[in-house]
Length: 523
Image (spheres, rainbow, N blue to C red):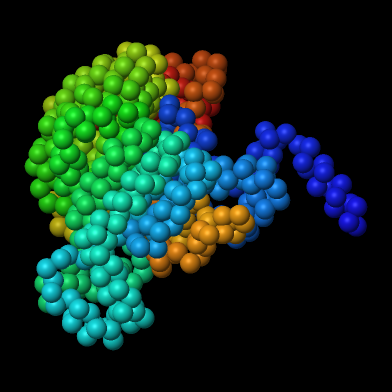
């Protein structure tokens, strides 16, 4: 038996590194390898959706593989540390510092996810007295743990522990490609939040605030990326507050310009709140600086809540910028004139392969058939177009005004691109942490990931991976030669009534724009 084990080990050691990497891919795949900027799924809901939890033995399998020998340890580290997730907590920053102190591990980090909870607003002096009195009303919630989190948040911000840890770690992540800012909500905080919403008297004494948390964290993360001179070229956040974007304005303009010049992908979905138009208008000078400086941009997505579409003109945000390398462009929840969409598409007609206009509503005087006709005739590089829930502003406003009518607040990225709607809840709990530190062998000084869960249950909108492996009108699928891909040559035959667009109708329109057969193409 011992002889057989030795023979098996010897055979395994003779395998090439490339083949061993293939084996590791089957044990724990790396979704970042699948990214391809010109595919349709790039900005779909699946991109925001948390990846499925790994099988219980996956992390252990990789860790055990690394214990075999030095060669296997190095190969396994590529998988184990390609993605690192850090929570805003003392344990989270300690873990991050430990990774940063190990250059042979830190050099493999390509994606960094920063998970930030709601902040307990300062100035609520009575919170320490109020929360214990709520223990019976909050059921299983451990108020003592909540109080500990409140004190910990204040200590971290006051001591700048987050800034120090992020700057050191990002400097060690010499291969970093993608940074994302995510919002997390643990069960205890969620229970308290629900209670506050139902009791106005408590709301005046205890406040949970995402805007404050997001603003602070965005500012610190941006400063850390600058101080570390990070090679990161991609930034995303599925729940960014407009006020947090203003935190970038606190940096000197040349610093913001340096960050923007490195960008190749920017994927932002802003949360709602009152007075959204004015808040975004206040960002106009900042967006102009960022977008005019980002000469290397290949993919852009700017989105808003489906129930509260933005009404600003497109160029109040994008400022007539033309990106020479742009491959995919997406916007969500916007009231626009047809000529605004046409003008932006025309500027990028030489390279643009994907265009997403999700929840876009045309204003009075505009027709979708005019937009579609331009895309079909002039956008000769276009491989796919997504028109999920497009419509007209008048019909949307009338629906919203009807008593009792409800327009759902969709998750960032909207609903699934599949024909049947997904039941996925973007706020569902998911306990996960990429780049597990369990059973590190020679790196045993780093704490076990199980010790560092901090009872957080994963990002509400984790993901933003924007995987572009798509079954939807992929560019590799040959056009049908049945002769029907020239159907409805005239835009007038599209049946655009200027008031409402049905789901079956928009699917036909998507195929019509890219000249795909309505019967034999998948999408």
